[in-house]
Amino acid sequence: MSSQSPRRVVSVLTLFVLVSSSLAAAAAAQNEPEAQPPTTHGVCGGPDVGGRCHSVPRALRLKLIAIPAILLASLLGVCLPLVSRSVPALHPDGDLFVVVKAFASGVILGTGYMHVLPDSFNDLSSPCLPRRPWAEFPFTAFVAMLAAVFTLMVDSLMLTFHSRGRGNKASAAVAHHGHGSPPPQVHLHGHGHLDDMSEPAASTEAVGKVEEEDVEAGRTQLLRNRVIVQVLEMGIVVHSVVIGLGMGASQNVCTIRPLVAALCFHQLFEGMGLGGCILQAEYGARMRSVLVFFFSTTTPFGIALGLALTRVYSDSSPTALIVVGLLNAASAGLLHYMALVDLLAADFMGPKLQGSVRLQLVCFPAVLLGAGGMSVMAKWA
Image 1 (tube, helix red, strand yellow):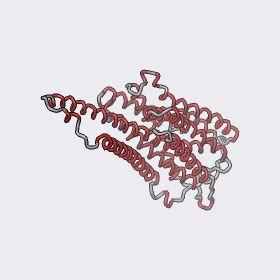
Image 2: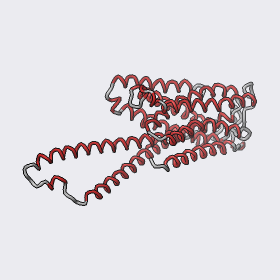
Image 3: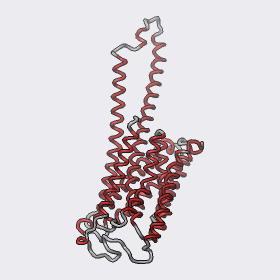
Image 4: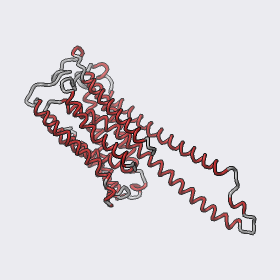
């Protein structure tokens, strides 16, 4: 990968963080009392200041604890697979790594289905929104479907451009070295040895062609792994900023307290899934550092942003519900596609798992365990 790639990825990820956070924050700061229907669970567009759970000092203390705790849990989760090369049992070619990756893929799948998608349904079906059009059309499912198709398009086009570029380079190399010259064995002037010499030459040429195809297949797979990492990171970044922003602006101690522990476990396991993908992408130290930094800091950044906007943020204002709901729906569609197609299907349909029924029977429960763990955590986060 070129030296400009880390800069390009930094720019794209920074843009995603800034756009998602600014959209959510700007939308949530808008209160429109004239468009707000009456509700039974609180005031639309305003904070819930009643009840024993509302305490600004206690909520602030919990948020200040949450920022370093979530940061450390994120760093630990994403860095664990990256240091696994020093552990022979966790080498990417080993069976144990495949099982751990299956567990982590289940975590990402559970995150999309049990955390992000329900949040979007709740936001876009809120009674604080006008019934038309939000109650008359399933916007969450529609946006998630579009996001999954868009992710497929990006995945496919990236591989197409790469393959076309490699093909053009190979054609140029053949044109440069060939110049229409005859093959080397033509210069052997008989003596009965032409047939004997052509067979080893043909065999060598066939072996070289097979090796070249293997190298090209490896390069294509490496590019695919890198596309998976970058697209997956974007989906996680959007969701992390949104959930951090909501937590940072909340003053409900009863909500924040279990959310801190749940988010720590969530970031730990989700980081393991992302770290395994980063390891397979074979990035250099600088690019790994960029990806680790963005994954680890987006949720604490969202919490800090929510703290700064506590006085103006209202997560029940109609504009905030629409923007955050649509962002979560797009993130859910992206995570669903990545987990099912690029992670689980690619592994289970690949040669390693297809060649071992025993390993498949171990990986299936690992996927269910990861998805089940995230499903249990959905009670609190």
